[in-house]
Length: 352
Image (tube, rainbow, N blue to C red; front, side):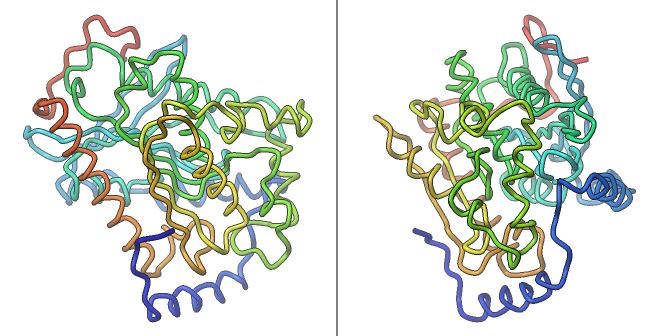
């Protein structure tokens, strides 16, 4: 299932870190104070983020995509200078839909910019506030779709003709999958997407088997409370309605999806979401290639933990993106435009 080489030394390091995780509190969306505290700590950790990127030679831009009547803040990372980029990546952050922002993935996005010479566009979608019931999951889904339509639409000469990728982690992988399903209504935009990178996503809001079986020994996530947490996202739905696409992408029509790179952790209660999604993605007629990695001993969120997985998994992502970019350029014969060239005339989804 996985082609990543994970030797015994790496596995031992993952296991040792798991013992640390086992002593730490689990993320509980049903506790109204956890998202508030998490968001405050996250923002504190991000002080000076732009300066750190500048020292690495990465340029930060801010845009507001106006599309479908929405105004969605975006954070764009580009290589310094005016040389060509090879692709553009739409990044959708994780955080259980209730915490996070567009700066959350700076570390990994900067590595993407450096390793693959791409531009990365991160979406600052509206977070869900289930305890207040004034921000819904649908609004987060709509923001991400509007950002994708802005990025893929006509009139963005800086991205026109480039292969586009969509990348999401955890809740962001869920939102990325909903975007792909909803883009099927505009096939010309979906055709611009050369691939999807999905890390340990949530694709069944009714609870996949591994979610429903999760117990108190689950790492990172609160196993016993996961089904209730998913229900909090859609309080007006029953489980059957929660499993309707695109809300639950696992049950959508996956015909016409782009090639995908998927990762899941063997110790993640969301493991079955990815395994089932990969099987269905591969199972449709004329299915696109799916590369699936189930990583032994890996918990949810392993990209952010100090183990060898935080290096080997991004390295495979970088290589996969490079392969897809080369294939796109060979097929289309297109040469990327220089960074910084922008012509927004005629764009149905404008930039403010």
